Amino acid sequence: MSEAKKNNVVTEPVAAGKSKEMQTLVYVGPTIPGVASHSMIFNNGISDTLKAAMGKEPAFKGLVVPMQSLATALLDLQNKTGATWALYNKVADYKA
Image 1: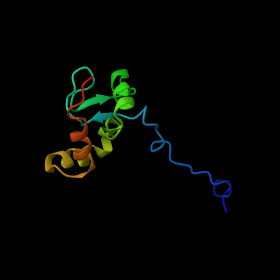
Image 2: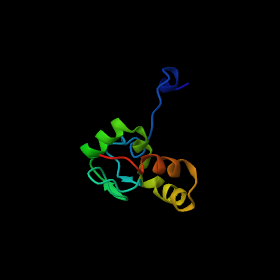
Image 3: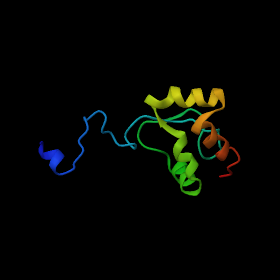
Image 4: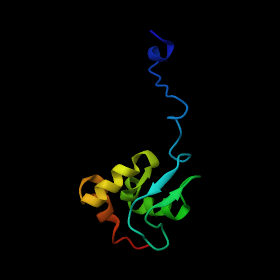
């Protein structure tokens, strides 16, 4: 048994191990003036205004997706189904 298995340590490849802060992320929620615009891209972490909105309304967290999940999230919005659609509607009336 490997040393990592004995110590219950999970190791991931470097590329897959990027933190959410360092990945390219896309906001797929509705445009909220003063917070974020639909399809806004974040390369170096999430903006302070969006972080503040996440603190007030946790549903925003599910609307910031990695690029690898963008197609699925947009498909949910187009079909008006799934978790992304539910979160989108939850934040639609958010006021900054």
